[in-house]
Length: 198
Image (cartoon, rainbow, N blue to C red; front, side, top):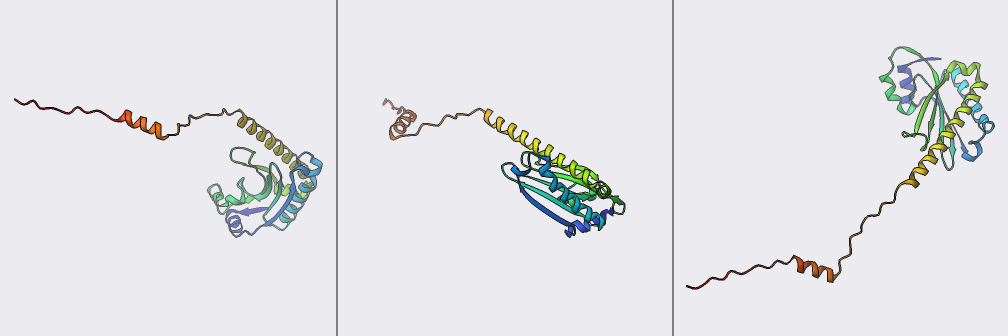
């Protein structure tokens, strides 16, 4: 499957692409590849249909819970998410026919400093010939990202605990007595000049 930058930009600007989103609880899928596989198989099957029709597609698995994460797979010509499609023209020629690939995106608060990562996953053509293996690989990638998120969340929690507690000196509250004393101290005595009569 090939596409020109102009066609790609037109389609993305008009949201002219297929979209699918599945939501699942973190506890149901985060620790077992066998639990993730039905979702990755479905994602790859939908992408295969889109490729056969010559359509762009974004498919997502939204994982809710204590450490929420969104996994996305997009058909694109470059490793930039659809949300940033306007930047694609900075890297590609308008009239060239580009091969479409699969890009795997992860979005989570505990993933890294930018809370986002996008990786090249596979050529689009491979989905039509190697769907089962790609679904396995996608599940492995998701498990790897889950582990990164868990590790980073633990590190952040430990760092927060290790922060020293700062105790600032709180200024004493002024009472009428202390205000009077301060005023007395500040009062200056001035000597009056006396003139001697001659």
